[in-house]
Length: 104
Image (cartoon, rainbow, N blue to C red):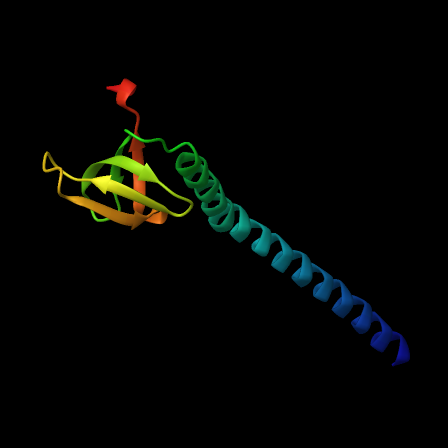
């Protein structure tokens, strides 16, 4: 009976090892498909905002197009439309796309 008990324990530890490996593969796959693309998008957005210059046409997260007229550390002043009085300061994180004037 003691021999059967040790064989059962040996089979049980092999089963536990395979479950741990399965969870490790599952966590690795979740990171690869969910976390990695999100971090790549964050890096792309940070690079886009660091290259922001005065005169660039921007699209805000609310869907408005405007021209950047001033830039500070975390704020930009954007002019909307042809009305020179419509200048709104906003956070840089509210910019979703930047178009350079020479790209058109």
